[in-house]
Each structure stands twice: as C-alpha cells, then as structure tokens.
Amino acid sequence: MNKITWFKNYLQQTQDAITEIKRNRMVIDKSQLTKYLDDQSSASNFLLIGVLPDFSAKANTADDFRLVNTTQLMILKKTTYSEYNYDDFYGIFEETYAIVELVVKKMLNDSLQGCAEIRFLNPESIQIQPVWDESHCNGWKISFSLDMFL
Image (cartoon, helix red, strand yellow):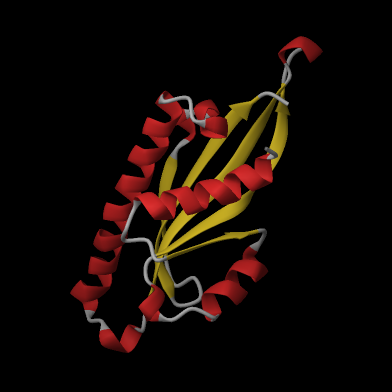
C-alpha cells in the first residue's frame, strides 16, 4: 500500500477507534484546510485533520537510506465565539486535549504493535501545540515524524 493511501486509511481507523471524532479529512496545505473547515458546522465536532506528509532523506550512505515522513494531525472543534465566555473558550482546549491524548496513545500503541507505517513512529518527534481560530476552529495539532525505509 502506498504511503498516501495508508495515511488516509489511518485517519479513518483513528476516527473509528475514537468515537468522539465525527469527521476526518486529509489536506495538503492551508488553503485546502481553510476551505474544508469553512464548510463545517459545529454539529460536525470533533474534527480530525491529517496534513499530507513531507518527505526528506536521512542517510549517511545509500545502504542506510531512510525517508523521514513529517506530518501533523489536528483535533479541532468548530467554534461560534458568541456562544462562549472566557472560561468556556478555554474549556474547548480541555475537551480537544482529552481527544489528543487518546490519539497519541493510539499512535504509540499502534507503533508498538508494528502496525503498517506507524511502526516507524519516532516518539521523540511528537509535539503538541494549540491551534487558535483556524477558520473558526480551535484545538490542538500533533506534529510527528516516521523514520521509514523507501
């Protein structure tokens, strides 16, 4: 299976495993992300977004050549700001972070189980950062890399 098909399938498997996630989508860049998020409603919360990976080489020789697949997953909640006060707004980040924890645990477990491409997960590469007002969505992004063979 090619790497793009695998990633798209992994998004669906993640949605299937985490019932709080209502939709998933793979995007290439910010303009595609914006278009997709603009078309969503708060009824479709929570959203799992996968950013198409970048690939870079990691090797000293041709014998140890690997591709480092760097990508992001985002857990987002569509937000209508008029409905939220200060505390409610930060509650969105608490809600979405609880889902982020489930996603990261799934990624780590899948990598230990040797599941497809995720078995190449580099745990040290995992970073979790807040996402604020991305097309009226808030939540978190999980950046990570997979050190895989060609």
